[in-house]
Length: 158
Image (cartoon, rainbow, N blue to C red):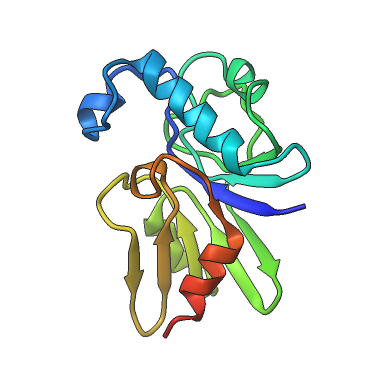
């Protein structure tokens, strides 16, 4: 079993293509490519942490097409029917990582290592003396979930 993180897929969100300059002609193409990319790296027994803004409309339709066991963290555009948690601290080896949708919430966590979404292409990584924040949104990861190993390697680089 492997672990992956992602955010801001915005399945079935027509306007997100224009808002974020995604390279898709229409929402059907975007959804198809996002699903193909997801399933190309995630196996059925893997775990994916989705850090918010999963879909517009029926989330079950998209969940049924995606590999892996998905833990949803609440985003500002998520359907109220989607089971989700607000934020989570998760430990991978020596790393206790705070996962949240909005990077502004990074400062309420004692964790130095933060994963977020919400900002689309605004940044991929921010390092300061107190925090190391990585945006796991699809817009900065080639529209594909990223492995936790890749994230840990980024945290390990000083």
